[in-house]
Length: 171
Image (cartoon, rainbow, N blue to C red; front, side, top):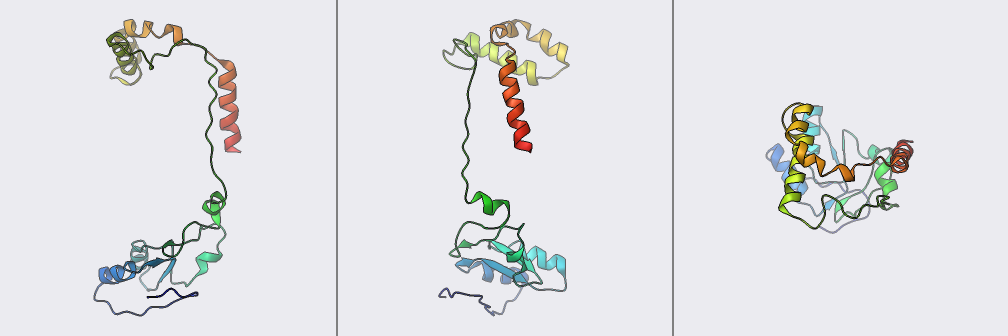
């Protein structure tokens, strides 16, 4: 089948619902599908199994005009999306950055590793996520937790920046 510019309506006979899905998915194209039926649940079930970028039930192409829905194809019908949040993201790229303000000579989860440090981390993990009440976990891991005293600090500047980043992200 050669790709033509514009809508194409292939007409094929099929023996079952699954056979119709297999025929549709056998195409090298996958821009938009339209499934028609009086049984809306069945039509949606079929549409959700189609390998297409978009589908509509009992409509031809109304979904392309909906500004909140992303539109675009898969397979040999292109890639990328326009409209909706996904469309906006097509023109963006994300960057992750981190500034660490701690000034410790080492960290408990970094080199050099030793059996002693392993036991300390194991105790810390048990304290945070282990079984029992908070006081039981603290009592059980008291010796291991002593190793973490030098790492405990309250960095208000870092906490404020983290708060501002999360607050601005929600706006």
